[in-house]
Image 1 (tube, rainbow, N blue to C red):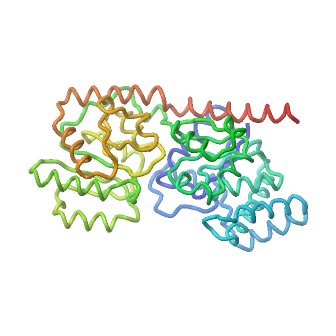
Image 2: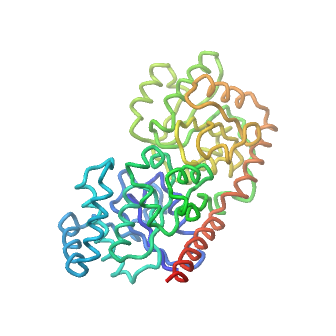
Image 3: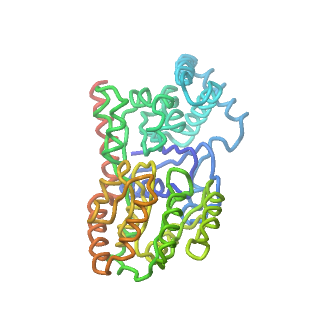
Length: 408
């Protein structure tokens, strides 16, 4: 199967799961063409991500005039299809979170994508990651005569504004819609027509075999907790710093590592200074996948006090190396982490609840941490191996195309 992947920004430091999925599809014999609307918005620190830059076609690389040229060519070559796609783009702009000029740009990007696909030898399936603008471009490309399209919904953004994103229309026109958790599927079913429910498949994000290693790493004796993720409002790092302040006020000895970077870093640094936690909290900035694994191995456990989520890949990564996870009862997280089995779950939005879980983890004996880590590793091995999940994705596309062929 020849598959074209479309992502808004690629490669991106927080989207290594897309790279892993593409690599797994290629291991199973698929040819994957990479397309992105634009490039990266931060330093690309991972060598594998840097290699992906040369494999990716960027639709906005040649500027607005190139997009306009693609649209003009498409309108001349197939005026009827172009008119239908134009009407669809304008319909998607009604009640949208962005005004109609953006949707005309999406149409021009779709024209450029169709042209680029034709120049690359074509594809039998077009797949977008995230149900936002990339999914709309894929849908418009299909309306212009491009291949059948599908998209993966991760959340939480799509779940925050499904009507403004036209999610129901995208699901109606797609041949497959992917949710990364049962929770995600339930949220998509809320907005999909009943006839479209069978299109929604659960395909987990996954890890490559090399990330697991041969066995779980023995638990660290250090009183160190690590939080991995973009420094942003939905991940809850500000709350985590408040919880750390509570533990410090009790005289507990610990280190908290915030692995990542993002728009809320100045606010988080200010909170660290306000609470006098400079000696206990360390912010790494963006780091590579190998460095993330190193931080996880060096920690007692991973803590993620998220307010909104899909199902964080970093939780899988922590459990894969035998580290318990402290996180919230949010979205798909309880599908992977069970309280008292693979770690500790606590109420979202409560610094006191986060502090209780952190206190319990810091006091837990090594054998309890090791048992949680082993349980977590087994659960990830059973549910989140990327080659297994990529096979499910290929099967979903094949089934959808077979059904379409029988109907035709």
